[in-house]
Amino acid sequence: MHLHLLSDVNPVNDSVTQHLEHKKNSIHKTIIRAKFLCFLSLVLLSFSQLTSAAAKIDHWQTPQGTRVYYVHTEGLPMVDIQVVFDAGSARDAQQFGLAALTAGLLDTGAGKWNADDIAQRFESVGAKFSASSSIDTATVSLRTLTDKPLFDKALETMQVILTQPVFNEADFKREKNRTLAGLKQQEESPGALASIAFYDVLYGKHPYAHPESGVIKTVTSLKNTDLKHFYQKFYVPENAIVVIVGDLSKLQAEQTAEKLLAGLPAGKKPDALPDVAMPLKSTQQHIEFPSTQTHVLVGLPGTYRKDPDYFNLYVGNHILGGSGLVSKLFNEVREKRGLAYSASSAFIPMLKPGPFLVSLQTRNDQTTQALQVLNQTLADFITKGPSEAELIAAKKNITGGFAMRFDTNKELASYVAMIGFYEMPLDYLDTFQQKTEAVTVASITDAFKRRVNLQLLQTITVGKAEEKSVK
Image (spheres, rainbow, N blue to C red):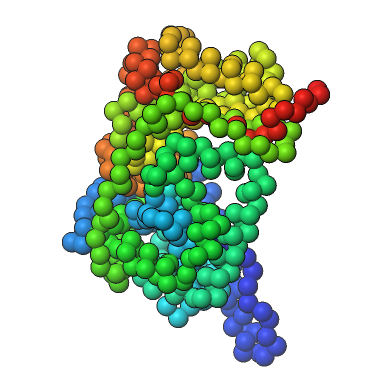
């Protein structure tokens, strides 16, 4: 759940005292908002300074075992803070959807505050807060000004949310019903059905197999106490990293991390996730759906964050299907044959090998042809690799736009969180372009041949199989 922190609040009262107090608060909020907008503008103006200093990541570990990653940026009196836990949907066990609901309930009530109180506290200091989860992680994020009174209030609110979530029964029922409504809607979406089937066939009984939001059966059976137990088990200092990017000194960063972690339940880091088993053979599964377009997903478990092959696979995929309108897949499927509006491919690296997938949507009666073109394009790329000209163009495209990926503190914090959570080298951002430039046609071809076994590809199609559509 994300709080809408900049919306207008506070009803007007007709007493003189309350009216004056309200006016005082309004002026105060106006000043804070003006300062906040000014600072956001400065973010853009100081882009070059930020990118040049982006890679200087300071790192230490607290006595409780929490790793802290800190980047000092100058000139902007604001800071982005993230606390990341190994508490994503991969930790659901058989209670699919538990991690997502737990993260979603954090800011609905904490300590003595309800959701409105929390929203007003952040709004009164111009701060933004969010809590979310993915397959690997649960993340609590704060963006706030560093002016001490404003910063202290925002940090205190975040700390109470982290350490004293209430998990109110009424809030739980509301969020659970909202999740169930969303899952019901997914049944009407061929794209969602294709994605669910794709992860299921790739990962079988592995914790990556089920949807992050869960399935109707498991979410229906969840109880409020399940969320409390999940929080007690996984939201512990030993299972967390803290990321701080902004205009705080190292001493302030140390104090911030200590304050945030104080009061978290004691615990331990969970056992490592099991390894991913590759499929034993290629399979093809069709799900009948009354749609005019068929969704096609083809792939297999691909790469993980610390994979030595990562840059070869990343640059190679950029040429194959990751670069949009100029990729090989787009050219073969869309430009030459008009079989789909788009076609793409991607590696999704995670703690364990995430999916390599090739995807497109096509008219039902063109599915067989589109699938043939997709598979032939992939096979040709694995056999022959890219041309030297394609590789040069891809490197220019990747390195030319690299700095824009973290041109704000918030984006930089997300990169630092990725580096910290996956325990990647601290100079990852500094060496990214160098490692991209080191990729060759031979290294791409070698990596793809070893990592994308055509004999193990899993294919999912969702659409109306026999329909003969008319152009």
